[in-house]
Image (tube, rainbow, N blue to C red; front, side, top):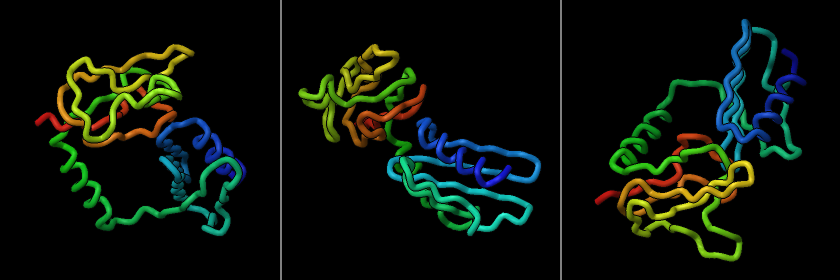
Length: 166
């Protein structure tokens, strides 16, 4: 795999809306992670590829940051955050599509952080193939966190909201 192929892979992943792509071949492993505002690429190769040779894509794609996998305490921080969020219930996406927080551009948001929702309360809409599907809460409680940006692509089962049931 040459540098142009790696560069094309980074562009494709950034445009596709996928949150993470892993590619493993005989002598190279590539992981591309995307999220709101940043794209992260990790490349492991047993050959002469150096950090200076790795492409930085700056056109339509957010800046690429390179990270070598290192065993540090960073995973502990995410574990702690996951433990804090474990006491909350999650509203997930039942379909693939585009997430919208309001019914139309001139209307108010369905829910905000701090709002109380009941079962069957509409919390957002997801557009799939030009159809707008109202997504209803399956739980009652208080919205603690909104996990997806408005007008973002979402996947089946992707967490959308955190709800405190107490």
